[in-house]
Amino acid sequence: MASSPDKPEAATRRLSREHWFLIWVGLALTAAFVVGNLPIFGKTFTQVKLHHYVANHFGAEVDWLLVGDSKAGRFSYDGLVPFNSRRGLVFTSDSVTPVYQYHVLRQLKEKAPNFKPKVVFISTGANNFNRNGLHCRRDLALYTMLDLPAVAALTLPNGATLDFVEAVTSRLFPVYGKRVLITHFNFALGDKAKLKTDHIDWVNYTDPRQAPPETRDPIKDRNYLEIYRRSVLVNFEYSRVVEAALTRLVAEVRELGAEPVLVFLPVTEEMRALERELVGDAFDAPMQAFAKANSVTILDLREQHHYEFEDVNHLTHVGALTVAEEHFVPRVNAAVGTTAAEDSSL
Image (cartoon, rainbow, N blue to C red; front, side):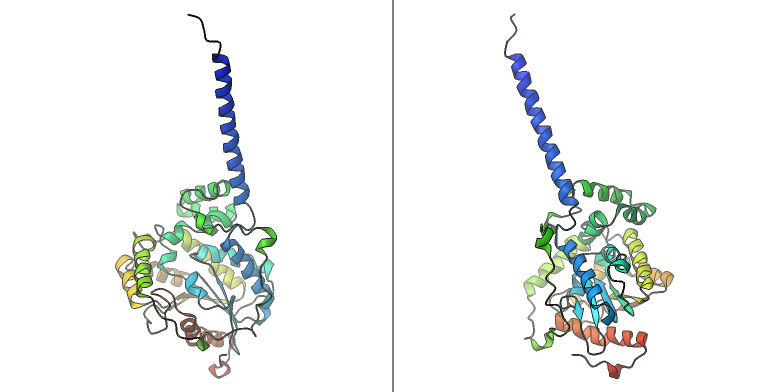
């Protein structure tokens, strides 16, 4: 049987298509690598720059600092919490854990050498420590932002080898798996990510108590509870990696010359009941042990449901300001050695 004269040409075409496929795969991986290593490619990365700017700009005027996730964000106005006698800053970003706060504070000695708060309130909760929960699974600081030696120090001694592997892989392909969610990518690059900080000033602060009261949305509340039931607190497993980051965060706070205070912020009765149902003592017990081992005070406000809430999990700005007046400023006054009479709020 005669051989087909088209076979060599067909083989060449197939080889050409295979080459093009490999070229496109290579280009895609290169593009992912470049995006993953850009200094700013999303909201959380921009927030770090803002924290450092505000700390450097207002450092000498600041008496206290609050760090945390979105629950802590209700305390701030562009990062500022001003009172006549006691001024505070807030470092916060959506759904972050103490790994993020450790990442931010470990750079402050270089970024803001004049920043010397008297007290640092570390807001955290069970949602920040659940290895199976949404917050830990999308921890950008652990999987993308921290340098790899720091990630190794947090993960490998705690048996979290997979977390370290995923951190390495996320730097090559930043939307790897379920860890670095595409929803965090805003692609605010270069000069377009320039911080608009000219308007940030204590003087321009507007007291939220002058605004009309906020109205709770019952549908939003139910949806929020379901998110926590199904994605945040489900199958709770305490994270030793996050605890290791919290240990290092406390050490960074003390290097600033400040007193660290762990804060469990107020939540509504519905949210607190859900925490008891899904978490039980699996968060409180290791936190008590951590506080004892590290000589850290815990300020537990979770049973105080009388403040004004935006939803089942977040205070309003008015509620947050009230909490700051009642719980934060007196502790700062005690650390500074002043009396409550000196603390008339704006």
